[in-house]
Image 1 (cartoon, one colour):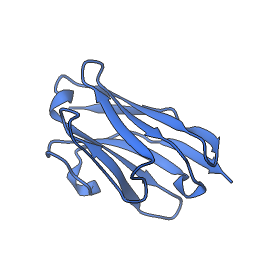
Image 2 (cartoon, rainbow, N blue to C red):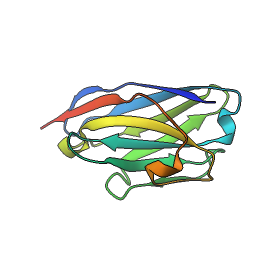
Image 3 (tube, rainbow, N blue to C red):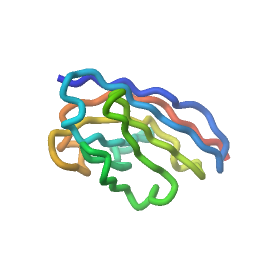
Image 4 (cartoon, one colour):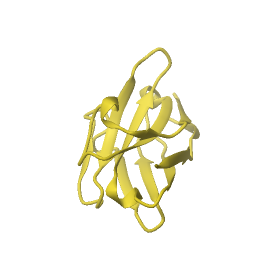
Length: 123
């Protein structure tokens, strides 16, 4: 069992930066790949990126490639999403999620989800 709690969301101007954090509980955290998703009002939950269990491999959606960076600290049971050069279209609720798969890019691949944190980017 893994419980996830996101934090760090807020309001930021276009071009600014935010770092989201995801705190995990559970003894087997380091065996999970961790993903970030986002959901804007009236839209489906979209893949943002994923980091494998070791932190050695990351994959991103094309819309955030080069602007967002995922990292993890297995000793602290934390995952981070550094978001730079934010755009109004990045506005959404951001979720972290855990998967037993090596990596996954769809919501169906994930076993555990956090409650989400709101990110709003003003123009």
